[in-house]
Image 1 (cartoon, each protein chain N blue to C red):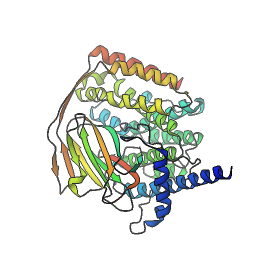
Image 2 (image 1 turned 135 degrees about the horizontal axis):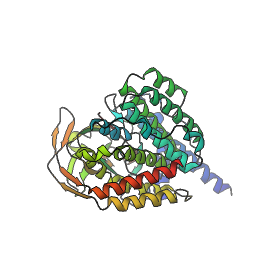
Image 3 (image 1 turned 30 degrees about the vertical axis):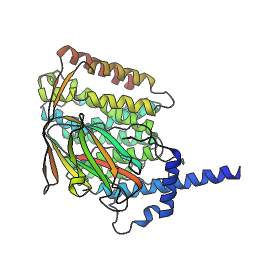
Image 4 (image 1 turned 45 degrees about the vertical axis):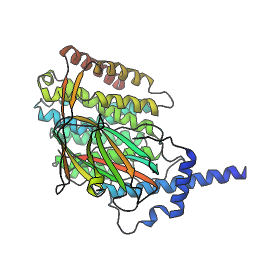
Length: 137
Length: 301
């Protein structure tokens, strides 16, 4: 009984701590969705460990410029993200841009894409990944 | 968002222990967090942190649909929006959550058509409904005040609205209320499609029709979201209706041709140039219009 209570308390403490960490990362990430962009009204996050990849599916509408912000850890550049189409052709990867924490995607025609996000193994072994999206009018 | 590797509880307990050991958020003092006046910071009610086994997808913002309707030059029709007195009539998690999403879409619609009075009234309804759904941290008096003092600025109103719904989504996910989050998104999506498709003039606008056809994947995502989050099976009827709609969308032809993207590093912008087309037969459009109207009415009834 005592062991069960201890385990539950530990899990509760872990939950609160990780929740707060995600919140801090989200607050840092929000600054990249500047006033030029309208937030899409959604909040995306995942806990990542090692080489795990979070896959995030979305439709990008033609004639729109989107801003994607992807954050993890204590500083910028911990989370890498790659945008691929349905045939897995790479449309953009932040790995080629010094792990930029945000990037704009100007879309000519509507396209279904997947954003694959993972931790830079040289910078973090685990963490909370937060992704935010905004778009220009 | 989904994880490609199988998640194990032990792995996340280990991760959590590492986070605790590292001191978590307190370690970040170098870069002050930007403050968001609409952000919520309420302690979680339960210990389970984040569901990582399921799939989460992005649903198009209702603001984008409203802007597309305006761009197409369709006549503004306030009567097409959901009646605001439904805020007192609708009961239960499924209908209240869906109605909240519908009002969010309506607010975008009336805002881009510069109907400040209706936008304010809609925001008041959202605040009331948000309170019923225990989302007062996201839709509160200060939001209403900000809204009121910026009624003349369309951009500000859309910003406030987007931030408020994002804060609500974050709050719901933090508190393991993914079912409500999915229902709010669903309501917004249903209303956006209804507003887009209901005016007969919409069928004459190729851009708007393409946008309707392009909702195929979003609908599929919504159904997945609802099914995975509806643990108490309270949204079964809504899911069934959306699946019937999905069957109609399945008959829409879409094509896609990859083209190399071009990146402007200085502007931190990548231009995605791939081509796509969509074709919706007239009878299919009518069937979708009828079905979305039926689903919407079932929420408002």
